[in-house]
Image (tube, rainbow, N blue to C red; front, side, top):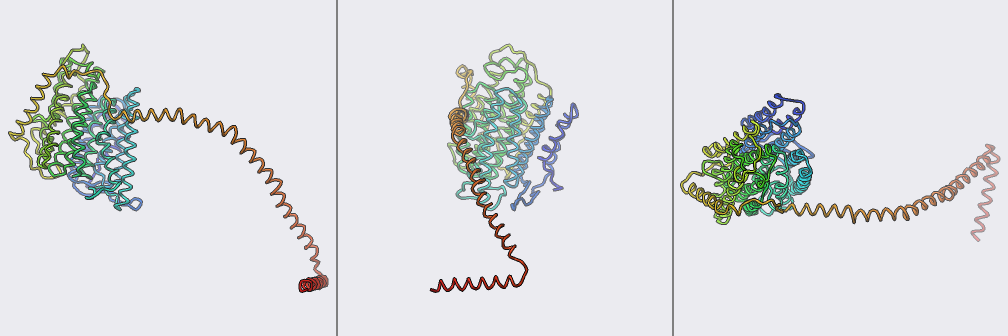
Length: 587
């Protein structure tokens, strides 16, 4: 593996030193590792690395091809941007968790077998959970426990699928699922992947936990878990029809729920669900254009969604507020933050000359090329809804709208630099998409900047803006809580705890009381009776037989005088006795 340096090891092993470094040395180190990882990705060549045998099965630590390289490229870029954004943090724990999280995501991207994939998959879950726990407070801790519970359950489902699929196929190597009817193992693996992709109804962990994470932790979380799931779906399940409809439903589901949201990061979290829907649908369509679209949109989404979370995080950092009903008028004191946030908003809304325009449209075009008019219509509607909420509603009520008189300022310089880095990439990809297209798994035959495409996109966006102005009062945020599918496991968990603390505990106490008052005395008495029987009965019989044998042996020993005439007389006596017995029996 001399020609291949695994970037996951740079982050995971690099995390060990972070607690021992301080000040400027730590900051330089936090930036050095992502830079080295970017260089490692740029230098790697396609191939298989780290082949070995484990418990009689082939494992492959790293499989490098164009699909894994494009995801690794954006993951390492995002790691650098995220670390710049978090440089002001003094707590080593969050940096360690972020390094392990990024390293685990890269481990999944290069995993050539399911066992390696599973280990890194679980590493992502535990490292990212820490970024929620680190926020502190009852709400964050409860959300982190729910997050961990869901992902551990998903990990068990994935492991069960891996075992069943491996036994059925005879191999644990990670690759496309065979064409034809899928077995139970393949469906369980798919379920595990869909959970991390936040496909409804398995999506509520995302919108539950991300708003409760630390300001910097939420930026990392917005980038890695769901996009790693998109990668594994593209690797194992391209062309699966179910994914087309699940992805389309996701795109609409996230937009609809965003209408109801008052929490700025929860609103952005629902748009993660919506945007990942485009990627899942693209993987499901399965054509080269569709997979390229899903991959490129994942690349662009990581950058602009991180920029949006960084903008919202900057507001939370300086004001301590995150509800739209509590924000407003910040454009005066945070103009740079507003400008950088709006670049991310234009990118996610697929404005021409921004990154989303050259990636999202590829998925929509692939749906049209595959003659899926309904899918095209639904994705276009979702794009309009994205602009309505992320590009118009959220910035209007967060930065403009009613001035709440909040004391605010621009966030620390490192946070603005990180936002500027992401914003620059959002614009650069939009203006010059060819370098991104060159990274994609298949040759790209797609031109985003056609007159028809620009006109259609601007028409949809402008009509959306007009609707926002007309119905502005109807869109006023309300201080409410929306109910999602997390209601089921929240309610189920409370019901389980009630059952455990009341009926089950009472049953256990009743059984314990019966045992102590009736069963245990009976058992103790039986034991004492058995002991007496053993001592006086069994032991007495055994000892009596032993004494009889010993006495008989003593008699025999005395009869053995050693005199030949005595033995002769004994033989004659025995012969006479035998003849007498024979005579009696004969008669």
